[in-house]
Image (cartoon, rainbow, N blue to C red):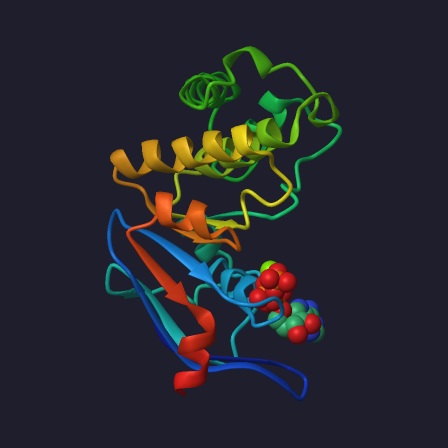
Length: 213
Ligand SMILES: Nc1ncnc2c1ncn2[C@@H]1O[C@H](COP(=O)(O)OP(=O)(O)OP(=O)(O)O)[C@@H](O)[C@H]1O
Ligand SMILES: [Mg+2]
């Protein structure tokens, strides 16, 4: 379980949120909604160790994780809004780069795992393509495969359906539901109300939580 306690973050004089509490249970899909600029992406960046918080604690399964620096990034996989795929690597290269270089997995093993992930995501025939040869929905699924390849305990998405058409949005929803069936804990920032209702067990309304303190 993920537990965020009393998290406070400002950029300079600009207080973004104060004493924010949030819990995500094992295997749960939690959607985070709220107006633009309120701090949703900032929260994900703190959760994944990209940004430091001013104060507050993050626990995973009761263990304090936000004082170990980069370790946090491997516990929570983040899928950025704009995918951030490496344009000069193929789909396979994008997925296996971190497992090989960070987790020191062999190329053969990481490629085998990547193929299995791509099959799950309906992308088995796309391994040798480059990001520019993919549709938005396909890029989104490569970004998901790349995050999953690091075997995070929790996976977090920043607006995974923005810019996607209905069919691609449906595919992303299916991926999230498949992962939920496998017991993966997921946090999803979204502006898409029907999508949030379709995929999530619970919705965290950022505006209400920030106003509360
Ligand atoms: N690196 C940074 N330096 C200074 N201010 C920042 C930085 N990153 C974000 N901010 C500010 O923090 C606030 C929250 O930004 P954030 O990106 O978390 O919003 P958001 O809720 O994700 O919005 P959106 O729905 O538009 O994506 C904004 O006012 C933004 O300008
Ligand atoms: Mg954002």
